[in-house]
Length: 273
DNA sequence: CACGAGACCTGTTCGC
DNA sequence: TGCGAACAGGTCTCGT
Image (cartoon, rainbow, N blue to C red; front, top):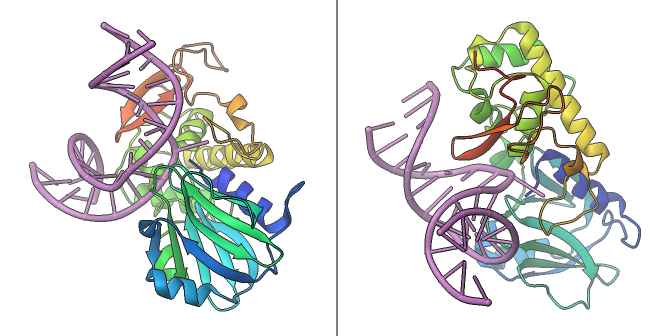
């Protein structure tokens, strides 16, 4: 489900709270109920439960598409993959279908990890590098410059679409925002990375940031049955708009498959070569 | 090294 | 209406 803007939105809501929902920071974890064992990456279910108990949530953040909970002693990490979600409920509420983990928190509230497709994972670790160490740069980080992107693009020879989906190359982009950013940068998804000029690398980085910032401002995109209040889906330029007119030139948006992922682009604005 | 296919899963939508 | 196929915001592993 979520990419960087959606995960950022979830992290902010959990950290700060929302109307009718209290913030989680500074709350103690009283217990853990694991309903689907394979959702837990590490450690063992028994160690997970005992180690979590009595730790306080000191901060909640995001790295790439991971949600990061800094606890008194450990780090609790979530990756929501395709269908995962984190929701706050009254402690007394009955579990929902597809709940995989429920944490009981101080103040009679619960944090539920709900994940229909069971692809999502949870980690409890004492240092984050074992999980987050292979992630590439944060696209919104100031230290990630056009020069850096240009050098990385030229260190390999790969198609832009799968390269930008590679979390070791750049962290946080997924199928929606890669298609949107490539359209804004007027680059064909199959362009080979080391053929870009420095100017094109600069446009690509600027486009990635524009798309991500716009999406974050709109609280991310809500597709299908998952609704979190985000409305960026109403501003998609190409994603899931096959056959509809390009917002720039009116040419029908094309759809191809690249690396087994649906890929949407404008044949006129993003010509091949 | 770069790419494609298959695996992991369940739910919804599409086409006949 | 029913039923199977295709598809879905992700990532890992394996074979070529």
